[in-house]
Structures are given as C-alpha cells and as structure tokens.
Length: 400
Image 1 (tube, rainbow, N blue to C red):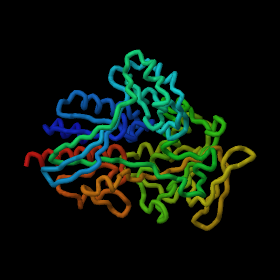
Image 2 (cartoon, helix red, strand yellow):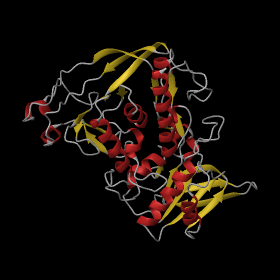
Image 3 (cartoon, rainbow, N blue to C red):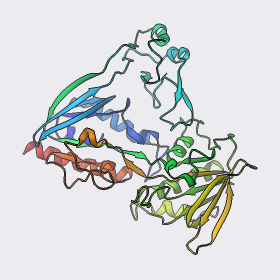
Image 4 (cartoon, helix red, strand yellow):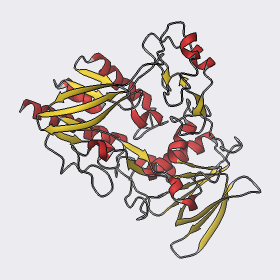
C-alpha cells in the first residue's frame, strides 16, 4: 500500500493487486504496533483514504497474479479476479448472516472462533464478505433471497485479465510459522498453548473475546503466562533464521497481559533477545525490563504438556548449564517466526528465491522490485521505509 501510494503521488499509474478481500494484510490483525504502540487502524485509514482519492491508483481486491512475464519496461501480468459475490449495493443490514447456516473457523482470528460464511468485514465498511469455499450454494441460497438490496449474486464466476506494465513491485508478505510442526511445543495438542498472532487477536477489541485475555480452554483469567521465544526459529529442522521481530512482539504482549491483569506474573523463556531496531525501542525496553513481575529465563524448551489437574500447562526448560527447570503456568504463548508467503510456481518466471524461500532483491530481473517481508523479516516501520524507497526507484525507472 505504501509503495502504491508513494509511486502514484510521484506521477506513476499504479495497479494494486490484493489477494485478500480487503486491503491491509496482516497489519489488520494486529492490536498495536511499534514504535508508538498505536492501533494499526489509524495508519491504515490514512493509506486507504490516499488510495481512494488518487485517480492514478486502481485497487483490485480478491485478485491474484498467476504469472509475470517479459522484461524491464514491458512486463505482462496475468490476473485472476475471484468473485466477490456481494456488490456495492449491500447496506450492511446483516439479514444475510442471520439466515446463513454455514459456520467455519474464522481465518481472520486464526481459528479461535466461528463465523458465518457471509459476514461483515472485520474493520468497518458495510459490504459483507462471502467465503465462496464455505458457502453451501447452490443447495442454499437463503442470503441472496433475503437481501433487500439484491446485492448478492451466488452465481458470479472468476474472470481473467492481462495487464501490460513497465515495473513490478512484489510485496507478498508473510505467514506465521506453523508451530504444530514442532510437536514438543504442544501447539494444537495442549488447549492453553497459542501462538503470537493468536495472542494479538485475543487482546484486540474486535477479536474473538472482545479484547479479554482469557484461557482458550475455559475462559478463565490467566494469573501466570509464559512466553516461549524462537518457537521453531533458529532451528535447522524448521526455520534456521531469526525473524527479528518476535522478541519485541512477545515483550509487547507481556505488557498487554500486565495491563489487563496487573497482578499476573510472566516468564519469558529465551535463547537470545533480539532488538530489530537498536535504539528505536529503548524506552519501551526499559519499561518491560523494570517490571518485577516479568522474569527472564534463558534456555530452550524441552517439553510442553497439559497439567490435567489444573487445566494449565507444564513447561520444561533446559538451561545453558544443562540443568532442567520445570514450572506450571496458566497459558503459553509461542513466538512463531515469519515464513515468506510466496508461491514460487506462480511467480517463478519473475523472481528468484533464496535458500529460506524469501526473494533475494539482488538477483531479480531488472524492473522487478521486491519489498518488505517478501525479501526478509521486518517490522512495520522498516517495511514502509523499504516500500517508499521502492516507489522512488520505480518512478525513476519509468522516467528513464
């Protein structure tokens, strides 16, 4: 979004292609972000207004690039425009959701609650979103029948388009690492073990609990929470690299817990604590380090299991000395790293991947610019700065 806005305001014609049904990416799911710990909606709203008001930007949601071919100054991008099923006549009355019989796991909340196949968007706007894979049509067409505005077309089909362009900016973002691939961490097997992106939704006012930090198993108040760093990261079997932002995210989330439950105690289990932007977050770090209710335990987690007696979690940590410390906690939050969400088969004609699956910006075709977490793990601020730089390079290239 940053690259699109900056390039357009510098004079370029921009086509912004978003695979999801709303703009904003994973930032939409955050409760607060660094450095000021603001709500992401403020920054996103500014970007969205700039996009809507700029006639040089055409934004396509629910759309995928299926191939990029050509050379600098003359690329061809093939697109698939997936059906929205709901048009702009939708007034947000919610009658469609009331009659919808299909319930699915809420992807926006990382499966922590259920949602109807058709529902209101997570962040404002009146036009409902319909999950075509979850919809029971044609056997069910209740939403289309009851809609007073006739805004729902369940028969809408995908369309294709071909676009000629001079430059391509690839900003495909990231996915959270699947901690279920590391069985001894208990993710998916122990009820009160969640990951960091789920925690971010748990504390969000529009999240599955309305912003309450509670245990998933019984909705009880967690009086003790453990944050486990490097959940699959720095591990040759899984993610051999450091995602940089995970440590700061865990410390931020520890503050969430302390703010919500002032008497709660916290332990952070770590191998190394990494600051992605040395000096930028010093004041925040001082606040967290000075909190006597947050303990830092250096070591690697050897096992995470359910405590059947309490419904809590038992954590075993192997310290650098070789000694094992075992403790009980009400809830565990795993700091999972960033995995590049790039489909190499789709973009294989246009991009080159490094050994970790990210796109190496140094070896791409001329005219292809890789930005943000598509090329390396970054925080929000660094991603936006990187995007602004890419916008400058693309507009310079077009003028040349």
